[in-house]
Image (tube, rainbow, N blue to C red; front, side):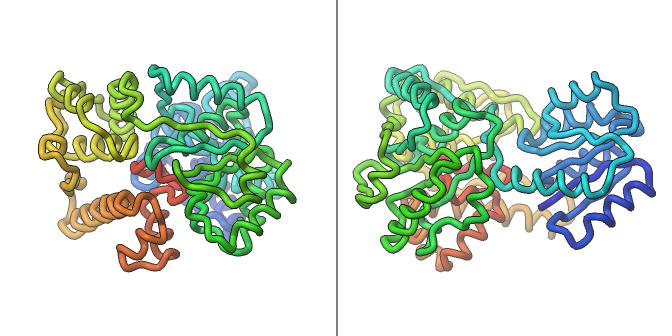
Length: 417
């Protein structure tokens, strides 16, 4: 896991770096906060450890700007001069803890061990859009609020791309927003069930099993035994395709409360608001204002049938943004052509040709992976077969691209933990 250390005292920076040698952490250590921001823009980190007093920028300002770049970033503030108001402000900005200097290295390492567990099961992004203007979505939202007051397992049933994973994240946020959250692809579970070490990450939080229809038959009984053994340690949730059925022993354990996630064609009142929220989320990552939708583009979105649901909508917006940097979107060429078969690549950052080619190749690979997953209806083994990869190789490529293999409701990559 990646850790960014920001400390302007050379001796102390070297001490902390040496203390982490040979550990599970890959450390980048810098003295300048501006350099730290450039490092985060170039490659995300899982944890930021920063001093309060830094040259040219306070540690508090660095935390604020760093979490704008990545809201899931875990932060630790350290200082020999921290006043209560500084500590309160750091916590308000999202810092996990405060270390008063000087501190014992064992305390520092123990804190990082705790953060490593949290990084492995990050809570959902509270800024993730949740649009519920339509009657079916209002009914689902009310059901989620009722479910949040119980400890019952919840089974989300709906079409591919309708938002089962998003609904699970919504329920987790309503139940206990600061607790760990982990999503696992059922297709990746073997006959031994989930790794016990992974389950330790979500104690007190939530575990979502995506795509139960892809669970191998030999994995059903071990999974049922694990649910019986550790079920009270966290909240269980699962996603199942409409029309699929569960093995009886799993239905007894995970089907206590079944919630239907409506397809996008049944929630037209949400469509434009959802599109605008997704545009804002995409462009915020790029540091530019979101374009507005002109009337022809709005009509296209409202007239289209959306067989791929929210997943297809988000893919369309991602491709369109990659081809446009203007203030408005007048039309969606993909929809005008009646298909979504265009491969569109954003221009890479200007630099040496080889570097730009590598960046374009990476963007192309991400699109090809998402498209193949869509063609396989989210079936990981089928997608691996279509791509000529083993299931393990496909899972690794998805992780490398930041595409959560356990949650295929959204094709847009999030920063991987």
